[in-house]
Length: 264
Image 1 (cartoon, rainbow, N blue to C red):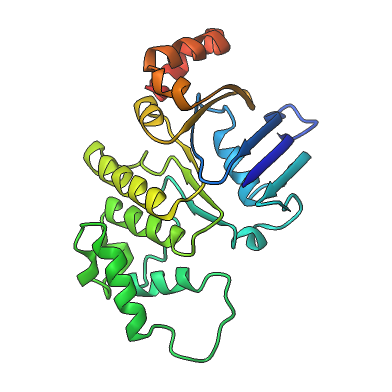
Image 2 (tube, rainbow, N blue to C red):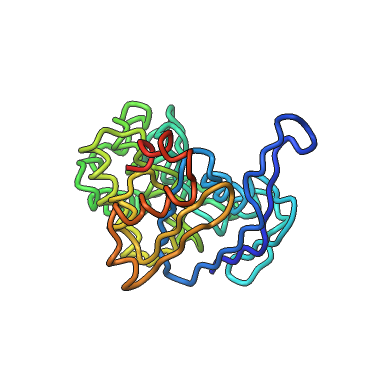
């Protein structure tokens, strides 16, 4: 479903601020994979998602989604392939628009627009059914502005919106990092439910190693723009936080002390 071959991305090339964000990285995700991504600050995790989504173009290498070479496609042309949820609950939705208006925009994403009413009664019933699965009572608040929701409620709505059209790839960029622990746990529960029900191929960045081990069928660790560890199946199931910390300490040497708090 996703294939990255020898991806290199350098920021501020040729200057004193040059930063190699991705260094010859290769990665393949099969249809239905749920891959968690961990690594220290500046390891290249978010850059990985940005080059897949088209936010940044790569300097070298190729990117294919479901067999289609999207390496040179702009972000808006990749939108039909990708659903993405960001760390900031304020991103991904329009704060001054109602819940149903936001969901209508997500439903029509990538489709040709006509001159009929944007939201039909049948659409509202669909939105209510989807929202009721969240268990947050939002199915009775379709005309509430999204900006009035809590961070957790808004992130839950964003998850629904990003998955509505069954994207080829579901990208989750530390989407619970800005939430309190209780709310983060609820959003992760909703995430698992959506990924499982929709059978979405998912790439999820997290700084929580316990979540990275518990969720998904595969885990990768990044450091300095490279994948330094990749485990799936039974190997992943046997891993512990202690194992991951040891592998990261071995790879990062002196940087471990400053990155450790970001990983646990």
